[in-house]
Length: 335
Length: 272
Image 1: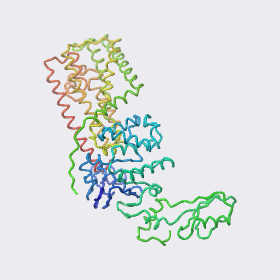
Image 2 (image 1 turned 180 degrees about the horizontal axis):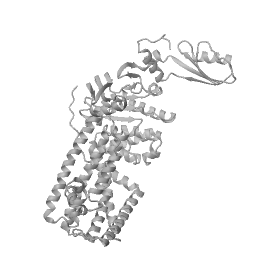
Image 3 (image 1 turned 180 degrees about the vertical axis):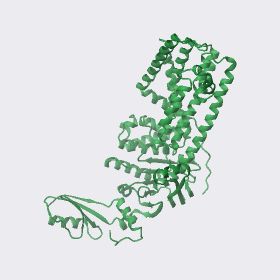
Image 4 (image 1 turned 120 degrees about the vertical axis):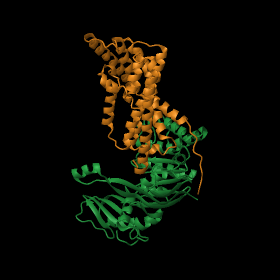
């Protein structure tokens, strides 16, 4: 039985239509015309308990609006939504007890309080039994390495420390479902990895269902098997990450820094994307040419001081899908 | 799938915790604590000087002899320690930075959270009234009424506090619609100071104006408890005075509830 289930979920926002100029502004004082935009337009999805799903899409695609309806903060315009058997916007308090949230851009910790006291407050809000609370806190503190700043006021924590604190805060009450909205935004690589490891572990060991929205493909690659892609309020892809990647993430970029100056750089099988001074970016199709071959060809011809390969990021995959539309088999289409 | 879940039992504990935390938080702003007490003392001293000078050159109004008006001003300044707090500022702040969304993801009654938070802050400042009073007595003499009058004064102060709380809450609720409320708050604070009887007793205003001002909710905040304290409102009129305050409290509490409902409705339909 699915733990998260939506059917034809829609959310229409109504905003005042502004007419241009002062005349329009004055007219708007007296008569208002509204225009409606569907931020989420018929989303149907179903998640089994214990799944870890990546929910992707560009800014304004409807990700946050969907999450807000799942958490019960927003009332849908039409369609149905059920989370662990509850209708979130009608049973907000009950639903709230089942869920945990981490919004990368915001903190649920109390700014002026030491981390430890924020946790104690959350214990009281969620009515976590003391014994369970002690176990969870000790467990999370050790895997997230919180001990060293447990007594520091939240406002003095670094972003990485604060996010680790936020993760513990979201999990203290053993939520069945956790919504993570860009949880790694702005973190350095070490902190990102710590957070990813934590997410993976919670999902694996506690069976927590996790919905993760992010723009960082590395989060998705590291953590999820299934991705749901939303654009313009509509789901355009729902399936295994591998399928999305093999069909759309076909091109990589080789970045080489030349040790000498060459007037013209050309390598068979790769397409010159850009060149700035001695730094040359070459785009190639990984199905037609291996990175190893390409690097060998480059080194035969040029003196090279540095080399890097850039994997396609989610934005480029997503961008390509928007540009071309999603088709079942994209392989072979030019990019 | 149809699962019926019992509505979670109401627990006071988290709100008590919020209030305690807010209290402790206020105490950590030590400089703020000292300056707010100092500011009361300075205002008490300045007002005393002003009244003494004014009374020396003018005929004292018979309702308020010099000792009464100094008592009035001093008690008003002590009251301002709790009355002038923007108790539900957290509501405005969390609407402003969008964190109200996170408040709604928690199994708590959000308005109670804001109220608990404000109550904690206020209780801390209420404690400060005692040292402030002790220090004020070093340079002013104030009259102390009978115990009965004092009790009625505190009841009236409490009602006045409630009225002030609602006005403050309503103002902070307007942040659901517009985040530009600073100017409005400023104007309301200014009006309250002036026509609420905090700085100048309303008795010194022209009679026609007094008749209007004394019936406004602003007077319920400062003027009514203070006039009870200095004895201008006699025991025979206690019931009427408190009833008028209670009337305003009920009206403003109703408006607060409506504002909160409309505001949250907007939040859940428009997403803030």
